[in-house]
Image 1 (cartoon, rainbow, N blue to C red):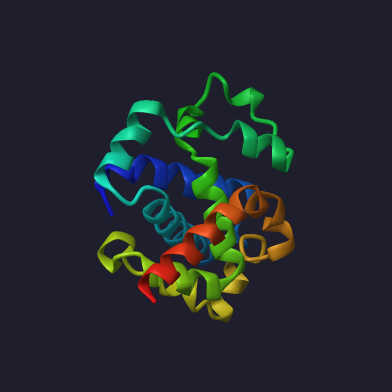
Image 2 (cartoon, rainbow, N blue to C red; image 1 turned 30 degrees about the horizontal axis):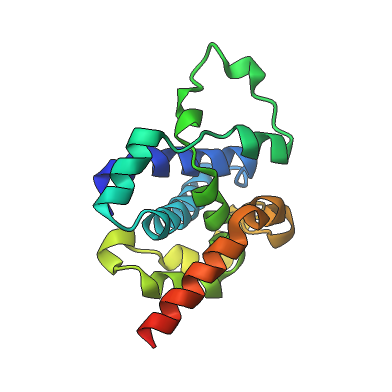
Length: 169
C-alpha cells in the first residue's frame, strides 16, 4: 500500500470508530481499530490501485466526511474550531467499501484475493474474525447498522470484484 494513502486510511479508520464505537476497554479498542484499519486499507487499495490514482486523490481531495455524517445523523458542527481537519481526508467510497468488507468477511476474502497482498497487508482480523473481534466491535461488525454506509457504493464494489474475478478466470 502506498504511504501516500496514509491520511485517507487514518481518516477512514477514525471515522468508522467514531460512528461505530468499540466495546469498552483498551483491548477492545485496539481490536476494533485493527479491524477498521484493515478494512479501510483493503478498500483504499481497491479504490486507488495505481500511483496515478493516488496522485489524483491528493490533487482533487477525497471529499470529506460530510455526506457520511449526514447519513449517520452525526452532528460535527461543533468540531469547526477543534481537531476536525482529519474529516477532510475521509473518502466516502473507501469508507463505504470498508463497511461492506466489515459486514461480509467472505466479500473481504474475495477482495483480498484481487489485491496484491503487499498493497493491503495483513487482513486476517477482517477476513476471519473470531469471537474476540466480534465482541470488541459489535457495532462495527453489525450488518444492519453498517447498511446505510455500505449501500452508498456497494454496487460499484461488487461490479469491480465481478469484473476483476472474470478477468482472472
